[in-house]
Image (cartoon, rainbow, N blue to C red; front, side):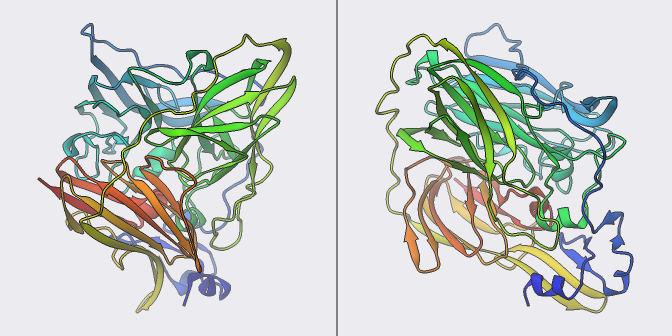
Length: 499
């Protein structure tokens, strides 16, 4: 029986067990509260966030090295306070005192040495370099925690051809979701040695996070609805601001990098009054620009865009409705949110060079040597005490002591991701970039609109996504749903890449 049937029958309380499953107990139904988690919607406070302030640039992580080709710095994760609403101080987690964390910029070919200082009270953490081609022992995966009060230096080289829009966030076992929604996430841009995009287009990073504030300014704990659907906040922020404003002259062509750093919010976006052109995704530039009226940015995905502001007035980045599946009541209103406003002045912009017709060559994978199938399910089963719910891959919940598959370094594989669950699940693989080759839903098979390097792809409910990938560096790697609450509730596995 599917979980929606259980919900219709009124079963609504969930506990997290040691096996990363959710437990529903019928004898606790009247209170709808258990284990410190309220089943209902998040508390709605009276806090009002200011809107319309000038867009702030992200702070930058300074390079402490004097040696060319070396990026050396320190990132400290710890507690601080932020003021999102007038008169309310909100306790958060931050990297170097800021959330989103400081923007890291390096160049392909650089050596990176970043010391992570974990100053989060009583919690282990890591830094996962999401999407980046780093060795397995530098990946910040859950098997390699950094204890509270200790430091750890991550060291890796950025290979030629690795330019792209990456990000960094915690990945400790059982605490990833909480540490991210409390503020720990940042952008990492790897620049190419020769950029085909004209410098006159600029390069503006926009990190999307969402925020839930209680009336006293605190961040409420996850509810049962959050655990089942993933946490969706009440306010979508851009670089930590609500609906900030950027002023540009008309005729401006601006390069943006969009980052979805939320736990579980799907962002279907359209720029009213300003044409968009996709130039890149997770792992860098496309082969050629692609015009787009809208984009879907699932949790953890990134896009590089050129937006043309062709006439004076106001251009707004707004959300469109997207039904990704929802368990129970309280589905958030996804449509009609204004996230970002561009005020286009009467002053004409200086002419800029045209966007190249070709951006870069993209290697096509050859025939796969191995094919694998991964099936996503959400299950509810009866046991002696009630109902048990799990978010599973191939029928199993994550076990940090279990290797799920063994792969060979350098070998091309075809992965078939089958979503038999009741909601979309964005699928992420550590340590590599892959190419999506096919989507299948119902009786329809379709090819992607363009070839791209990806580390995260949304797999809609009822859909099968086929992708080609190759892991080039040996060691254990994770693959998981990037709705972070689902990852913690079992929707994750380990691939051991052997030399």
